[in-house]
Amino acid sequence: NCVITNCVASSGAPDTDGGGIYSKDESWEHAGPVIRNCVISNCFAFGSGGGIMLNDNKGFEINECTITGNRCHDNGAGIYTDLLFTNFCSIKNTTIRSNGWSGCSIVWGGGLYCSGNSSLLIDNTVIAGN
Image (cartoon, rainbow, N blue to C red):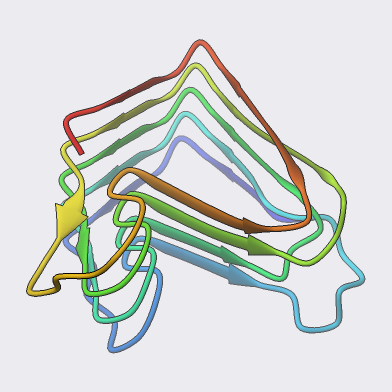
């Protein structure tokens, strides 16, 4: 799996999804990413996942991160997840704040949007002002 530690992703603006971090495993063979002690801020996605897009991964872990001020046109301005497997996912010791949409009227999950079959553990996490 991919481990991202002690990083800053700021002001990213791809033409599609995942303004700060984009992870997709089309083979469905690998463990999902581990994102630790990172700041994802002021990113923009023309699709979903303004800050982080996790698509078709086998689980993920986000720990001790700050995800703030991200925007998108679709779902999940802070974090968007669409997981096809019943794997463990967690968000711990993280702040998800002040994320939102840009130019859309019908969307879901300003801070966090989750779809798919996985269980999500949220522990000691602030989700506010999204």
